[in-house]
Length: 249
Image 1 (tube, one colour):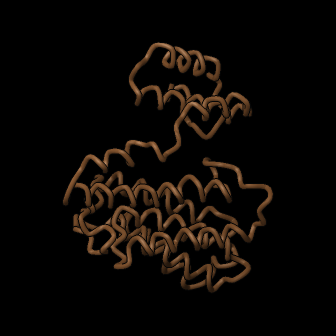
Image 2 (image 1 turned 180 degrees about the vertical axis):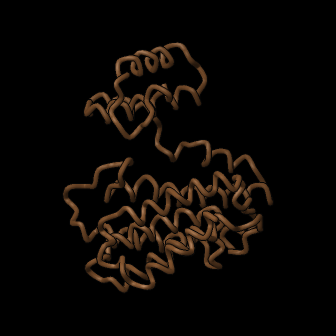
């Protein structure tokens, strides 16, 4: 199903087969994880097909996250094990708040469409709110794996302020690059922020080749965006982009 539904942010030419396989899984499988994955894919495929009635039908098959494994499993643990598990749940939930709920409000290419009832200026406000959530989660700025999420938020803000407040746009561009560089170059460390002090960041574990491919994509998301024309000739732009390009050497 996943293969037929790839990429998941576009309507699939294999819609009928996806539904056929999904319905068979729901009829025959007793594995909760498989059933949940099938429902998720069925709902997503229907949304992409604009079959909203059936998309809602599949969504209604899933329980509220109040009854999720993450809520229940933590109650089965005690002491340090429980503390570490709960801290990890908080991290994952903050990521979900941004990557699902907040991005759905303003729309991101390949993820969702913006809510039509919201003005364009709302994007900057909701992204700064999201940035604030990560700062609350990591008061010591030890973002670890979430350096990439913080960089992505700053990148959106760079685009939003370009042309309207170029100084602010350049500030967020510098922040974007700094967080990306830190993400790709950091080694394993233990978090110090009190909210996550039982957790360890593994550091970037990909090969140099993988890292450089990712950096090239990040650069493209900056250099190929027309919205940044108003700041393109600024010296701060060149310095920031140069930091990312240095990782390609």
